[in-house]
Length: 126
Image: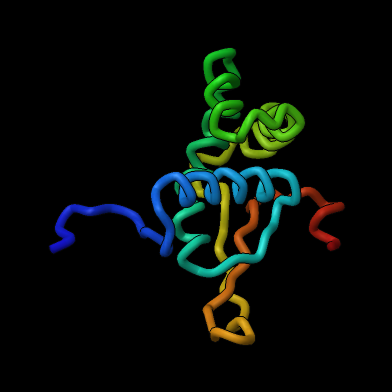
């Protein structure tokens, strides 16, 4: 029985799943919108919210934690602590949204966009 077991396995072992989530986080913060399957987006959302909250905190310890979570990508961490933290300073959570889009050709998997609510105007045009 799976009582009190949180999260989805996503047909991967633990290290692969964690690496996938980290890579998706980097892509989400870099492009501010990514397309993925609905279960992956639902797994990514709480992690992204916590990392944005770290960015809003803004201290050195939070920066080091974010650097650890985001695979050491300093460019993305800088964007997180400057642009994204500034855009979301008045928002108390709910930094991302999931928009269901289509069913993937081939395996009919439900697809969705996960995007930042406060997106940049230039990236919103894409």
